Amino acid sequence: MKQRPTFPAQLDATLAKNRPNAQGALMPRGPLQGKPATASLQLAAALPAIKAKPVHHLPAKVVPHGVGMDSSAVRTRMVQKLAEGGVRDPLVLAAMGAIERHRFVDSALANQAYEDTSLPIGLGQTISKPGVVSRMIELMRNGATGRLGRVLEIGTGCGYQAAVLSMVADEVYSIERLRGLHDKARENLRLLRVANLHLLFGDGMVGYAKGAPYAAIIAAAGGEAIPQAWVDQLAMGGRLVAPVAQGGTSGGAQALMVIDKTPQGIRQTVLEAVHFVPLKSGVA
Ligand code: SAH
Image (cartoon, rainbow, N blue to C red; front, top):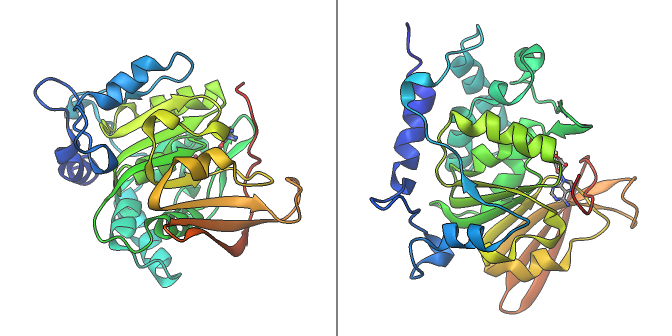
């Protein structure tokens, strides 16, 4: 059988330094440095409602092959377009080129996976356009040259953006409030063996305090305002990127908001108009 060497090999190489250590514990980086190596697993055990589990490891030979297209070439073209559209961050472009978006959508939609369009992922939710994903992650990284430390994503959805994040940050925590999508993301990510990505089921409106402080927080759903918990859980010097309703109603126009936590205080910047699914409280 013909092997597809590009994707798993690249991801493995990039993620190798985040592999579990001899004891099977994750080696925390960034903001957790200096704490015990098992901290991220302990915090998962400490929370009954929200469980953080690393995505399963499977042998490389079970990684499935493609869907009848040379997805690597199609992704390369997508990345070229993203770069032409203004995305500059090399880590973001590399991650967008490596993560196979077609594996995160229904097979009937796979042929549209590399177009710059949002697509349905079930339960009334959508996977964001590659242009928006790369733009938001570039903003979130704020010009960092290497990987960020710990990152929190609100709205796992199908898990695509979480997978991209796992290549540009040392540890990624991603929360989803819909059980069906949380399970779908886990299934989508199972074969990718992404050891530094932790999927959480819970209400992301309250963030995930046990993992704080975060170098960055990114939301894939838009509310009427930025929840205070997110700002509280941001590290000093950290950046939050989220869609927020303009004019105080969640049904209407939204814009991307960037919040920087600086020693001088909170700096808020409103950028371009966007269209995201609503941020909702509670789980379902
Ligand atoms: N990043 C996702 C985009 C999914 S759409 C992807 O790559 O597929 C946004 C998601 O946010 C939806 O799945 C929705 O259920 C979820 N969401 C909305 N409010 C939330 C909340 N309070 N906590 C966690 N997830 C939430």
